[in-house]
Image (cartoon, rainbow, N blue to C red):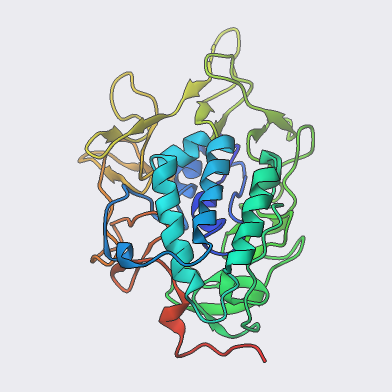
Length: 356
């Protein structure tokens, strides 16, 4: 099954790691891989109180919630599967923004956040999906300096992978490698393809492939290798795809001998079944909140493309609480040094070298 959208944590990285359009990476791939990719950059879960609640929001960070409003407009299913609802999204993005705004050299300023809110308000969904929203949180740290988040870097990207600290770098241009797999590594108007190359996402009718030329979110790459629109629930399937924006999917193209109709991807709360085939008569289902990461493998089930065939939705680990490789943290947080934490340049202060 091909995928219409490889949202590599668009909701979690776009504002919180310093680039407003930053991580909606559309890329055709298998459906279950697409489900897994929606949660690669941060492991989403139920918003519950933790250590980060003690932080007072940094000036301007209330504007980070504008991303939640836009995400709900453009990709309502993704927002529900990642955060649960708009209020929970706003809470987590405000916390992540605050952690980064208090980092040395950060460009996560009140003025920049207000400008980004205005840009998001006026942006189309295509602007968001093509990484073209003009938000600028570039900081003061030169390339090569130690960093904890994108907003500290003059070049706009902190090459951190899943580590606590990384190294500042310039964003990559068209055709350049994006080894992190994140749109944040690519310049405006470009997304990181499944083959980890910065490219402009293809629009309706344009040529596409599964590795280097992904379609824009909301489209899918047909068997003829051109981008086409997906269809509404109940309509005949034009091909095989998963649309994480609205949560619709098709297993195969509908034919006279094998009719296929577009189906709505399900959502499940903690304690409920999830997976590719969670229960008899139940569609493929993600946890909401929690997405793929919250779907714990059931006894006797197997993993297919990163998603259990059957599983049960788990609760998220609190900020500041112990975690392991099998756990998942709240949106915007990662398991760093065996603790769930929002990445912050404060943790890398002793090693950071400001530009100048």
